[in-house]
Picture 1 (tube, rainbow, N blue to C red):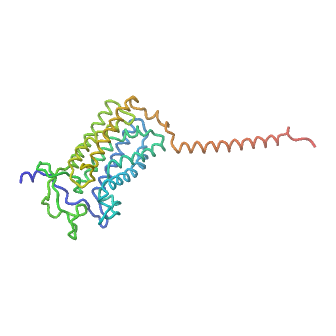
Picture 2 (picture 1 turned 90 degrees about the horizontal axis):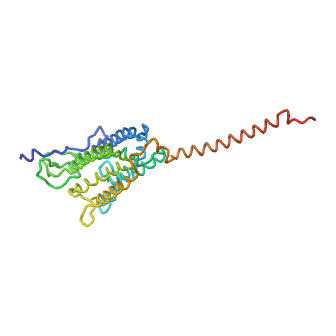
Picture 3 (picture 1 turned 45 degrees about the horizontal axis):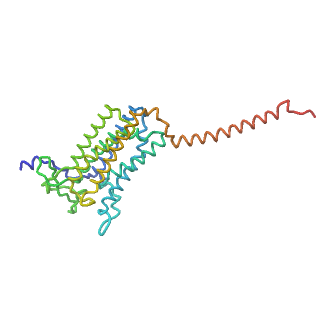
Length: 330
């Protein structure tokens, strides 16, 4: 009884309704994380010599790409949930029901950020360094959505911080862990809250990379690489604790292998990029990657100059013909 009283209760639901409008805790946590990442990234970017508002401009590209990439990774690696006998493939589009793979979100989000940086003439590694702490804190906030959804937990435990899992049902009496409501708060399981372990680990990574950035003046993408290495180191052991359904390779969850591979890649980049020296001067680097708008403006200006030069030559020729010296006596 004492152990039960010491456990962590779960929310009785993850969805509230304002009339017909559903308010999903998972979606709200994702949105809150994005806002924090943009706000903090904007501050860090300005401190590093950037212009206020540029992070928001980049986010317009990075966020949609990241959401699509995260969902694609989830659907690919957990395809058994959506495809096969008795499954609904259209459920793969229901992102509000949870399911975003961080690897896909980072990969495709980086593509979107690169496009935005290219258009603004900003080196991507410098922008990534500014965004890194905010991204990992956004991931921590997003894990709160898993808490409300009663998902991403580990095996049974008797530890005092074990998480209570309740049976949730819809008004029709159908069991539904996401859309249902827990009427009876007697736990059907007490489990390791692995989402909480990851949340706390992510906050620790944020502290680490901010400290390292200030002490060693990291640049050239090394802050971002340190974030990736730190995050994947934690994700490796946390993933081994999870018991939810997942794709397996040789009996091991696929994300365990991905975490290891990405970790070594991040460490390698962190070491190699050290040869580039201390943190780059963002203001001095501006324009080293000429944005598409600038290229177009340059082309337009060239065309305009040619037209104006041609008009000036025509005017000069006309003035010459009409000058008194050019008029022949009859």
